[in-house]
Length: 364
View 1: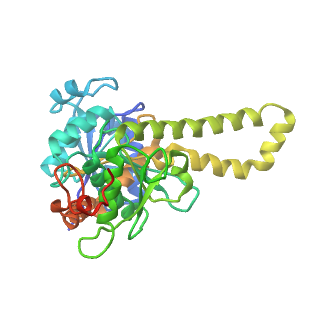
View 2: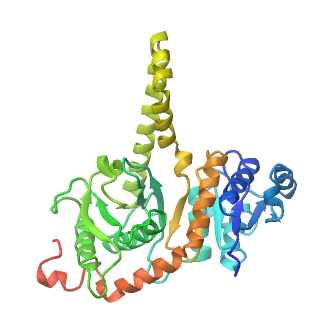
């Protein structure tokens, strides 16, 4: 049975068709069995395909000239979903014409279109935006939510943890990923009521035995430890997650810019740069966002991957590769299975673990 193809919004992103097609072509070198639905202006896509013969026989073009603007309001973009390249790429997943969609366009519009077209999986109240980030260890860390939901209650955070753990098992290969909640401290008394309630729920759910989840909950983590590699999944609401993500990205750019200034400040510094170039090249590779490009909207009835708007061809290739890998490993089925293992009767309507309140285990 052939694998489902990947729909690519060829018009999204800062560079548009050329980079999106080149990125898809690079990804296909790693995933030769996948085929593509390229959505966008047919003439421009055909011109871009001239440089990538490996894509010509593996691609179908869905002509569309309308594009979602980078600053367009999601509410307006939704009304144009049937005429824009982004909307048609997402709709291809809805109709089964594609198994996944990849876009480098407007994040808010992509989230809104995806949620309306695909809906959430049973047991998921809200989808979450997840991404992988580098650590000091051999593995990456999965972090969510990064902006899909500005607020999240305890029940949402538990669902995010289940989805993030399923994603981590695919990208990092851990059978029981270590999950922590982002907080202002590691002590049990720290944080909001929602965080403390979520911690109680995850402690009960990951305790093992019948109904135990395939994750290991290990309490709270502070933002300065996210990239240490001490945990596999970091869970938070979209407001805090987006701030943390941008702070990390800003710090990475600060370090690289500082090093650039230092190594070009004098002749001696330039000589020092030549001596230390292998180390600085390794650092540059580790901090390059293109090497970790491809955020995923978890919790939907289908795979949707968001590429960074400024990503180069290598970055787009990584985003497309994420989509391919998630299709190969049946991400949505894994999440649905884990939610069934959790069981809705484990959660009270107020978002607290049933039984934990009576035993005094739920945080007040």
